[in-house]
Structure formats: C-alpha cells, structure tokens
Image 1 (cartoon, helix red, strand yellow):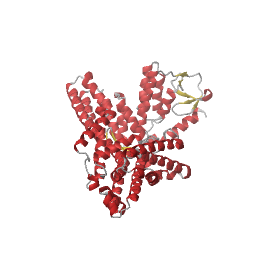
Image 2 (tube, helix red, strand yellow):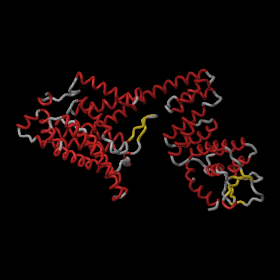
Image 3 (tube, rainbow, N blue to C red):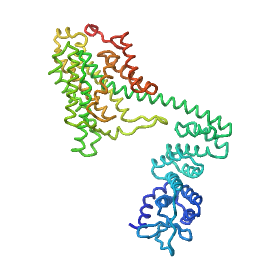
Image 4 (tube, one colour):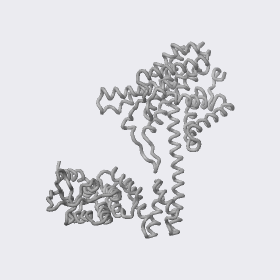
Length: 535
C-alpha cells in the first residue's frame, strides 16, 4: 500500500473530527507544517504546538508521521511524507510529489517526541468520541501548560457533553495557574477548589509551597486545599461505608445458611464454606455451558440460571451429608466438628480432581460491569451493588419461608423446643434434613455472588467460614435479624479499621471485641426465646 492510500485512509478515519473542529485551508495548514523544517529544535517545537492547537484532523497524521521519522522537507520547505519504495506525498493534501532533489529528513529527538505527544493529546480534544475527549481533557489536567489554553477554549466552545466540559474547565484552570496575571491565577485557584483530583491537590500544594508570590493567591490556595481535604474525608467515609456494606452483604449471604443450621440443629458445620465453593463452581460450569451451546446474545442470562442451579447442587449435597453422616453425630459437637472438617477437605480435593487447582475466572454479565461515579474518587460498581441487593432479597425470601410455610413453622418449633415439637408430631428428622439442605443451598447462592467479585478456587469457602461463625455468634444463634446486624456491623467496622490497623490486625481487633462482648451477652445481640434456645 503506497503512502497516498495511507493518507486517504487516515483522512476517512479522522473525518468525524470535523464535528467538533473545522479543518484549516490547505495553504494555512501548509504554512504551519513548514515550521517543522526550521533550522533549530525551538522552531520545530513551535510548529508542533501550532499544529496541536489547530484542531485540523490532518494534523494527527502529520504529527504521527513526524514521530515515526517519515517526514522530509524540500528546499522550499514543503513537507513530504515518505512512503514505500522511496515515494513521497504532500503532507497536507496527500498528493504524490516527485521532488527535483532528495528532500531532507526531519530529525526527531526525545524532547520533540514529548512535545508531539502533548500536541496529539490536544488534537484529541476535538474527537467525535466523548470518551476520547474526556481522556484528552484529563491528560491536559495532568500535564498543564499555558500554551494549551487556546486549544482548551476552542474545545469548550463546541463541547456538548457536561462531563467532558467540566474536565475541560478544570484543565483550563490548571493551565492558567501558570499565567503571569495574578487575577487569573486567583480565579483558577477558586475554580480548582471544587475538584478532588490528586493532580489538583499537587498543583495547589506547589503554590502554597513557594511557587507563588502573590499573598492573595497563596491564601486562596490554602483555603482551597482545606476544602479539598474536607471533601476527601467525606469521600473516604462514603467509600468505607459502601465497601463495608459490600463486605457485609457477602458475610450475610455466607452466614444466613449457617445461622439456620446452627440455630435449628446446633451443628458446627465446618464444611459450610465448601457449600459456598460448590455454588461458585456451579456458576463456572453454567457459564461454560452457555458459552459452548447457546448464542452469545444469551450469555448475560447465565447468572440468572446459576442461582437456582447452585441452590440445588449445594442443597442436595447438604441433604446427602446430613442423611449419611451428620444425623448420627447429633449431641456430639466435637465429633461433628471433626467430621465436617474432614468432609470439607474431601470436597476441596474432589473439586481439585475435577477442575484442577488453578483458579477459574467467572465473567460478569454486561449488566453487572462498570459502575457510576457519585463524586471524585467515589465509584459505585454495579457488581457490588447487585450483590448488596441480592443479599437482602435472599434474606427476605428466607423470612417468607420461615413465616409463611409449614417447613418454616416446623423449623421454628424445633429451634424453640425440639422435644415438644417431636411430641406434637413434627418429623424432626425430616426437618433436620431439609434445614441442612436449605442452609447449604443458601450457601451455594452465596458462592454465585462471590464468583462475581473474585476468582473461583477450591479454597474459596475457607476464606469466609470463620467470619461466618463470628457473624452468627455475635448476632445471636438462629436469629436472622441478629445475622443481618452482625454481618453489616462486622463488614463496616472491618473496612473502617483497615486504613488504620491493616486488614489482618483489623480482623484480630474485631475478634477480640466479639470475645469480650460474648462474655457479657453469651447469646449474642438478639437471643432466641424458647426452652431449647435458652437451655
């Protein structure tokens, strides 16, 4: 492909730029590009800056050719682009040129390459894609230059997108901090005070640190920095609160099933984490089935199918374990603990044998990808938000089961007084099996949620089993309200402690606090009522 075809293709690709900036006349653009043939590097830099602020789509191809060492100049300072087999074309029009003498190649050093990058970033301000314009505006903010102000003003004059316009205004204000006019610098400081960008903090810090001589500007910069610090403190609180609720929702999903089985049956199920793991691997299998056998348009529905599938797989495994092993160990807590711990190791090895030891990746559906920004630095992701909502939905459905179904009535009766329930004709063995299956199934659904925020591995459940027990004991054994309060409380407290104490020390402090709390309230925050519960 010769250079003429390349230039024509580039011209077609960059045609949308005309939406935001009109091209210069050929003669005007040729005059700007002729500066690239200047004798010194300062002349070349001036020409690059002029091209960067021109807003002409053709300047992008010219600057890229310059960076690649493809530009040459004739004796009349006509700029040519070198193609294959030594053919040349005019850099402005793309027309083939046969120079009378060999043109002189325009040399580029690292200093010029940096200037070319800045100029290309400015030209992107006129792109038809709002994402490109936002990226260019952000780059201009992070590399402020007074020379960029004309380009920013030109982009602002035609910008329709509010987000991009706000970023352009910040970039312009950052650039005007270099203005010789103190009034302009003062106005820029006041405008930048509304931002929480780390670059803005750095620029204002430089003014306070000695880069500014005007006392009014220094005072305004100090005030702006104090305002930004307050905003960042509020943002940090919001981030910690959201992350705490997110962690709390995960703990809630992991602990609900444990609260049911522990409360009704008094079984310390150390294999509960492996029920979570089975749910996560079920999600992985459903995802692969959708990828292999169904159209790509249906892929986003795999997660909807995974929820009942994980419930059934984990629930069936729970019923099988209760009927074959655990029912023979009631009233023997130590043996139950050891047996379920052994089961957990067996399930982990079974999964390793089937799927292998490496982690498995489960993709987010498109409707759970990305997020939205509430304010600078505080982004709410859709996957976390959906998991929080999912946790409350599962809790609500479980409450309906317990309050509105015969199984729920029998479970509550067995929880409060097992012997009396048996005397009244309630089949306690069947209730135990279904309860264990229900708790395991809910753990499987927790695995579906966890697969959306991390990789799936055979050790996935062990990460949450201890935290799940802490939630149940702290909230009150068998109490759903206590489980909710314990999960959210532990999640939020953990996230607020982590910045100061670290993740590990934070968990240790929480554990110590729970141990002390239990000394005064052995039955947790919300103790169940009933003879068996109070025994």
